[in-house]
Image 1 (tube, one colour):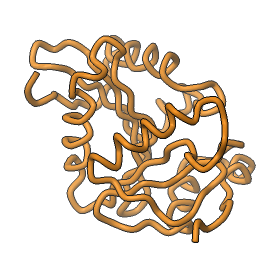
Image 2 (cartoon, one colour; image 1 turned 120 degrees about the vertical axis):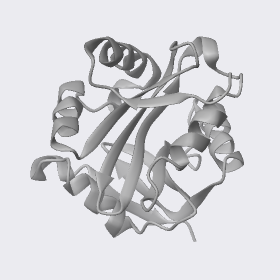
Image 3 (tube, helix red, strand yellow; image 1 turned 30 degrees about the vertical axis):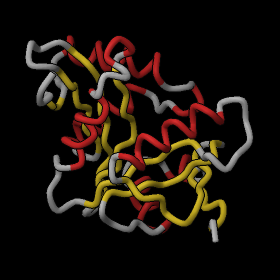
Image 4 (tube, one colour; image 1 turned 180 degrees about the vertical axis):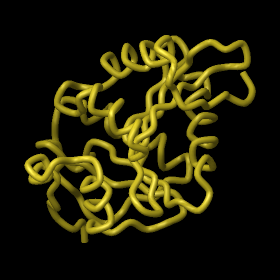
Length: 184
């Protein structure tokens, strides 16, 4: 598999594939309402991308939230049958270049929290660190989940991070986006 095709999804067939992988790949407590994301895509503050191979086979999804000069890779997943084949590495490299002039960053579940999913969290963090992402020096709590922020060739303060959510969340929802602590 060479270069992936990354296209913003508007067709129902692509949106259905994104939805199915989204529901499989992310725990309920970390999922935003899909209808809300579709609405925010129409408004321009979010974008849902289908990742396909050279034959047009759906291999993954990337969902972004935009705020000012920032692009938050909110959700990123590869179809199970394409995992551990370098597809995620290729996709992430292309996604990091997708929005020139925007600061690229993402959230991952905290590796500082002891839990039964700790090995998977460490594996995901290692993947991102191997792909040029850099951890920020603070943790946040997002809808009850302790998260780390990783950036690509930039810095993002908590206040800047929070401002991205101000663009997509209602005021009542924003109380679920909280600074947790500095790591130093």
